[in-house]
Image (cartoon, rainbow, N blue to C red):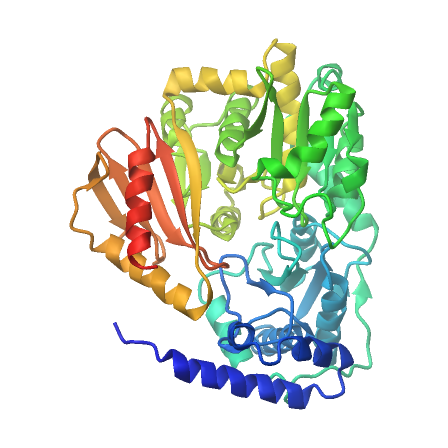
Length: 555
């Protein structure tokens, strides 16, 4: 491997820092931000050593000054590059822009719209913060070529980002990210090629589109007994995000009234004061929900993340606070669908390689076909679009990922926390009517198909050195001579970067063990961390200890 000259990178970062100070002289806020890090070599290095690149979920980074941060200069440059790509690839390009509740999200959305219109691109913008699934729906309803969402999904408040969706309503995939990035890289952050002066304004998305989304979603869902539904008491929290109006509208359209909202988390707040990590995958995000659940003697808590494309659920089971993982929720939704909307022979369930293999055992009983994709719901959107283009939309049965990402019915091509929230209510209410909660039903599923405990472990790294260490670790694991992890004997290794898997090449490894357990290891597409997903049939602590020892070798 070629050694990286970090001193040269540091010198370039210092030079870029000085250039930003010079070129933003009239921007008081940016000058103040640059002044704060003056003399701090590590801060300057991390902010300027690279430019933000496309990851699993678009451009994402910490708010602040620099090329490796999210700020107006990075947003304008990205939008100009995207505009150049659109003008080369679409005859009369059009786009729609949305944003969530994060700091500067509305500002960045308006900046993006201004650059689009300055480039002569017909632009729509939502008049208020709006969830990802509604943006996905709007792209096709308005006939747009591109959609842009200003969001950092479930990350802490210091983050923001820029997601790009194609005309089919899912995030860009294939050659498009590379082509767009080439257009962005060709631009200087302060060059005259970035257009901001426009004689036209963006058009506001019609209000009635939100209603159409809600009723289209409602009509696509499996029917439920309204009396049974309203016997379930739900606590809902939008975690200060975009779900606060839309989940309520979905409940109302379905006649569901027996719920309360966590008032302290109901309104949008970019500081997320009651949930520093607004992520429905983490039980800490449900703390305020449990307080209200105790007060109201409710049954379950439902939470959507800030851009409402993910949904989570927690409850008391045997007197203990219990978080239902994304894999478990997906299994429960699939089980519910199989009983109330049985699959036709050959219908597809789409899931990622990091999602529970228990689905494969369920397929043997219910007759659906399982298709694995790379991590990222955009790959499920791509497969769904291909089915639709072939006139086979009804062949889609269900799609989900372990990251609390679900699409129950194919009325859009993206993950949807709003319809997911409604689906959780429907199935939790049914199980309650049978004298069970969702954990009880999950235990019955395990009894029938076998236990498959799922866990995710993250190992964090920082800066350019961290990224190099991550690559060294992946290469070590890829060529590892050992036949075992701890006491678990390896029965098969799949390298998604080198092996012919039928999927696009990806830096991910899958280890399978003699006892039926498995593990997928991959670097995060948006953050400096290695993610490990395990699916365990027995104690896995020896495997975790072995992994920690490997990682420590490179620290």
